[in-house]
Length: 496
Image 1 (cartoon, one colour):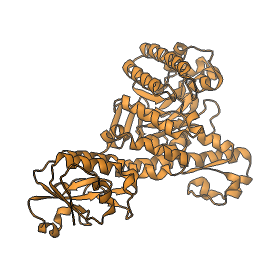
Image 2 (cartoon, one colour; image 1 turned 180 degrees about the vertical axis):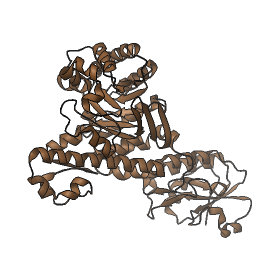
Image 3 (cartoon, one colour; image 1 turned 45 degrees about the vertical axis):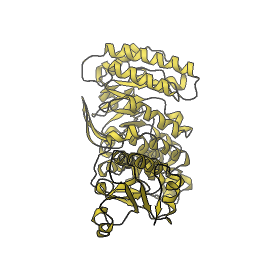
């Protein structure tokens, strides 16, 4: 059902197999209205979108039994995989609907959607804990009843995870749905978080869910339709995401870029080479009739979203998802706050990060001390033991691996030689050919020692595990002196 081809951090290149074909992930899933199909399904497929999502509740109200006779693929005019939202968004916006979860499940099975979603009770954002908990209970009951009545017909039922900002509810929801046997999970109610610029809370939710789910279960993110959120969501383990943002923004004459949105009326140049942007200037596009302008803007917005998905996918292939995500996180200060979740989620990021990569890692600032490769290398060094009682700590040379330098031959054989790197910590010469000790490129800058707490922890552990009587280092090295000046785990220091 879901095959992982390649991974980096918690992001995965995958293949999702459905009754109507395979979907390459990560994937953006455009929302397609079951009645007002502004952009035809054929055009979406031509643009490279392999799957769409449509609304089963609106389909039921508009078509009734006709939808069951024709099937959802004929109704919307799309012959690829289709996901159906059962009306959760309408519940969030307007309150409870005039239909039961069991009725909706029967309808979704009847229209033969590939990936149906049970009718849930979204928690949204800002609800008191007890109210949110009751909504989670209702969703879990509806999902339990739905999955029990589901037919073995190849449909992949989605478990909608609710709980909002209440992490314990999110975890309980995810664990329960996994036990029920849902093959895909979806994180519900993120739209309100994104509209409020609460990217940190959203990132916490995604990381919390990914901790609970096994890697074999793909994770969908509802309502994530802007390029700035996509790299972060993928890095934390989201595989698919849907949104109608491309059309909603277009109706307001808003133009999606890779780092935000712009009002069309304020633009002078299009920073894009899609068919729309090469065919019109901003002034020309602004001057045409509203409906045509909306349709053209929607096409551009789709191109912009897909470009970001493809760029993030390429970053996974290259093993540079960390670098790419941090670069994109600077698109907005509130988004950059969410980088903290990456630095605190080694347990989520490390399992999917290759132990060895074809390319050297880039190290830019103190944030990079928390990337999985650096954390894992420090863990390996923590297991290093030597019986030598003298330690030389030397600056990292340009030559890699460091043991190739002939000048180290002048150091007595009974002394332990280590080089140091602010991001990677202490590097015993014997381990200097390991990845990434010999496979990194640092920004040439002055490192403020107070920002490199991991270096202090790793150095202290190294000295405690190896009882050196003498430590030699350059007394003029402010970075090392900051950490060694207060060390009490050796008898004395010799500064050279």
